[in-house]
Length: 118
Image 1: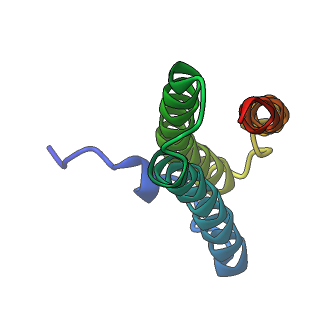
Image 2: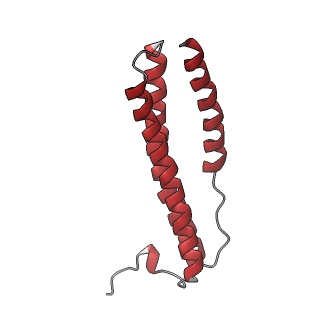
Image 3: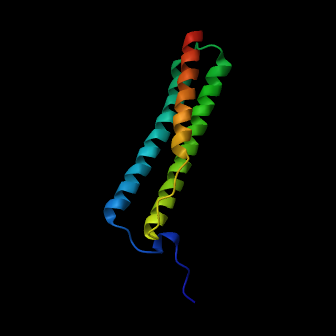
């Protein structure tokens, strides 16, 4: 009995240009994820006098959590797109983009509030 195929061996190999475009998109999501985590480190290290400290800690933890979850979502999106291309299906819709957009708006308000409080 031959071993079962892995998901990346199923279907038809897609055009390399589409595979490379999918990888570039994945890497862009990873860069965004790393930027959120770097922002968390920056806020923690370079704003020791920020008040209230609870808001600063909450903001740092939220940035770290969103950054980490975006890394996972990037991998999941890359895998789903790669599988869809191999099976010659339409690319699946992602809810990550509206989530990220909403988070950036909330983040801007929280950072503004933190700066306003001094």
